[in-house]
Image (cartoon, rainbow, N blue to C red; front, side, top):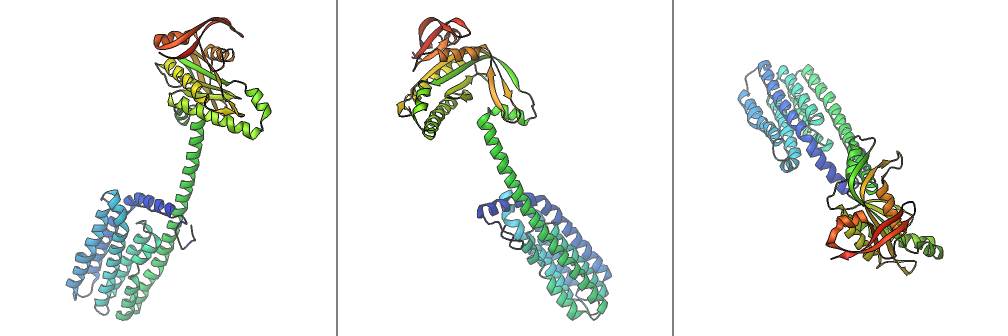
Length: 416
């Protein structure tokens, strides 16, 4: 904020957000406060009528109180039931007009009150105290607006000082106003400062929360983030049907040895960004990158009846997209592996959490990629069976895989 008494945020956009939030929060306060002020206004008027020592000017007083000020206070209460956009435009000017008119009415009544009508002056002072305190502390009016609304109290003090021959009445009236108005004004000022600081803190907290959410969603699938926010402390799921994709850059080690680190990271970042876009477009979940290797899964954490199809389309798209990029001034080339079957997936870690997948299907996809052909997608027999005749599959027979022995494999060429 600019300062304690300026009460305005430096950024115009933040000020607009605050005013909109204030209007949303003020609706209930305005409704309750204006109705309470209306009841208090009428009650004090009744007390004043009973205490009045003379019926002189009574018709004028009734007109001022009930035909002028009361409808405005009632209108201020009605505004709180209007649609939000209308309320946001009208609530402050309506309350300022209603309170200022009510207090101006009291000042006028004091000016026309018979000489020596001390009980009436006392009732007026008490009523003004209620209106001033209520307008400052209860209606959520900004400090400046509340001060403007209660400015007619100065007229009341002048009227009492000039008209009342009773020193006790003068002292009592001035006391009520001298105590109530500064106290209400300071309360209103402090309340607005508190509201603005609370808004600034809430806004900063929301920004931090949004950043945390962004980081979580960049590291974890959306459904996993939702479960963690819901209180889940351990997440591990068995997915009976899933397809795991592994991709690796061919010749990356050689390229890494001949370029500077910044250039290598930049080229690798461009390739992985391309992979992220392809994976997201085909509905797969990115699991992680390991050096120059990329791992994703279809069918986890959300079940997917066509997981093999989506994984196959993603692999073919990755192969073609990365082929148009370079790494260390050389054309980039991927070697890919796919395998389908049951997968266990879940969240690991407490401080640096990560979503990962395990199981024989994962190991087989990794081995198929490692023993694959540059620029080709090698798939297991389980994946080939799920793809059926919708794709062109070139049999490779049984190949030797580390830790697996001889395994039947196919090269995925494309869709038919």
